[in-house]
Every structure is written in structure tokens, then in C-alpha cells.
Length: 343
Image (cartoon, rainbow, N blue to C red; front, top):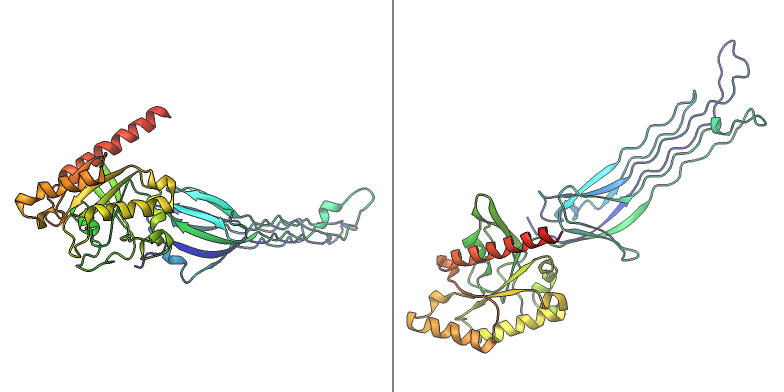
């Protein structure tokens, strides 16, 4: 299924039911008086985060949603039934904006989290409500109020513990296949990954983390070049970034310059994202001769003046991936424990 991370929908809450004008008419009961009942409230529209969904593709074709209208009141003081609420399920990580104003209405980050985006109209009043000592036969009633209608912009930001970034063909998809059950497309040409992929990495039965494979970035991505600019937003929710670099690129480019170029794109897109913790993963080391491998990796690290963790891997043969996975798991668990203690 094609990945869709933006959608525009129109939601309409149900109108409130109208109040009724009615008078009691029964045999042997003269001057029965008013007995018109109130209408029912209109149904509201609620967005509900669902962890079983991973894309907004369901909204490509169906874009208008309406809750049920409240029933009108009836005679014999019968109140109209309330309209049924409408529940729309969206992926966890969905941001909801009001399209007309650009206002952020909510951020659905937890499974089962609800967000009311359009409230149903209030019920109208029947003529029984207007009965008084001076108005014995009221003939006025009140109509129900209209339900809210909004045009919403939905934007999905994937929730992952780790985000993979790098130039096209750096080996991100191969790595996520090697360490998780995800099966993204892998090929020997650039931009093989056309949309983000999520994979769950299980270290043990009770220890796991989620990794996101983001389409490859190129120089100028922050200004719209390539495919990655569409998905840079997904990295903003990741706690740790793994910067993959091909140590033996087929095009003869300089791996150190490739790393610097991508780092600049991150900073252009978001200062906060540029300051996010990054680990360097020197990938495809199996393509280098044994006697050159260590020297090449050391040269890249020195020219970058890299201060963070560095790992050497060959994702296609899973060399070095186990050490990387265990290091990531320990870092994530330390963060989780620190967050728990601080709260």
C-alpha cells in the first residue's frame, strides 16, 4: 500500500433536532395544554489514534465525513433521539490542523487517544418549555443549532525510537532488513526507498525498539531537491539518528563530504533536528580490502572530527549489526529510565 503522510478532510457534526409545537388532545381532557418535546443533540466527530494504522491512505478517496443529525421533538413530550457520534481512526503520530486558520488542534501520540474535532449542534426546545402562567398556549419553539463543520489538514509524523538517514544507496533499507522483520525494497539504484518504512527490532522477548527508514537525502533536500524533503518531518519524532554512509561509493564521491552535506540539510530544515544526537555508521565495509578497511574508516572519522559513537557494519552480511543493535537498546533504555526518574 502506498505511503501517504498528508491528507485533507472535511468533517461535519450533526445538527441539533428542532423542538416541536404540539398540544395535548385526548378525549375527556379539555384544554390539554402544550406537550411538544425537545429535539435531540447532533452527533460529534472524533478522531481516534489507532496503532494498527500506519498511513493516511484511507483518506485518498473518502474525504467528507458527517455525524448523524439529532431527531426532531414530537408530541406527548417526546424528546428526539440524539444523533450518533462519528469516530474516525487515524494513525498514531497524526497532527491535526484547521485548514482555514492553520491552528494546531491536536497531536495524537498515544494509541486510543481521542480528539473531538467537530461538536454536534444543541437540541431545539419544544413549546412545552415556553409554558407559563401568562402563556398557557405557547406556539413558539426553538430550532436546533447547526453542528460544526471544519476542513482539517492531517499530517503524519512517524513515531520511532531510531531514525536512519543518509544519501541514496547508503544501505539504510538493507540495514533495516538485517536488524528487523521489515522488508523494504532493496536495489542497486538511487531512491529505491520511496516512502518511510518502520521496523521493530527485538533484542530479547521483552526488549525492543522501533526504527524508521527514511528515503535518501541529497544536497538541497531542505529546498525541495530529491525525495527526502517530503519525509524529513518524520525524523523530528525520533530520539536517536543513525547517519549511514557508504565507505566505498560507486560514484567515487567522498564519504566525509557526504556526511557533512546531509548534516547541513538537517540544520537547514530544523535547528533542533540538526542538534539531535547522531551516531555514525560506516556501512558497506565488506567492499573494502581487509588491509584498507580500518585505515579508510579511521580517515573518515578523523576528517569529520566525529565526537559521537562510530560503528562499522556490512548490513548485507549482517557484520557489526549485532553490536550496533545492543548499543542502541542500551541507550534507549537509559533514556527511558532517566525520563521515568525525572517524572
